[in-house]
Image 1 (cartoon, rainbow, N blue to C red):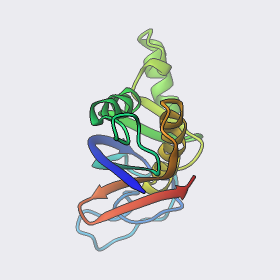
Image 2: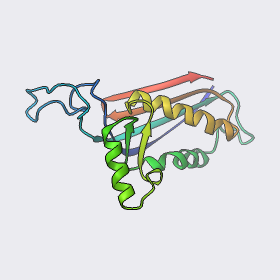
Image 3: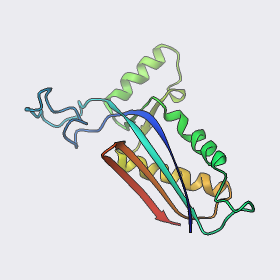
Length: 167
């Protein structure tokens, strides 16, 4: 099996619902000594995510390549560039109404902004799963006969999550 690996780095903000606790939810005081009740008033915050794509196949193309790195990067950037300096919120987040009204008042179509509304909480786990499914389809449409695909979302240099499957 051959595995092509490449990564991108994107600053993305998110907000996690009150089911979570700690700094990412914003329910810890500035001095770190007090924990506020869990609720839906968490802090929006961001990370410089490093997203790694590992594309595996047992079959090379006519040039004995998984795929030209330039083409792989083009496919990745066509999808991922829209997330550069974006905000991802879960459906039902109170901030969505705030942004909808603000954009509507300015005559801006919210669907053209860098605000993304997902059905699940935008955790690193869900991001890796979500983008796995997006790129499984994208790479297959580009003619790569995938045998395995892994998407790793690194939230910090110490914390990452990988979603992967044999295909």
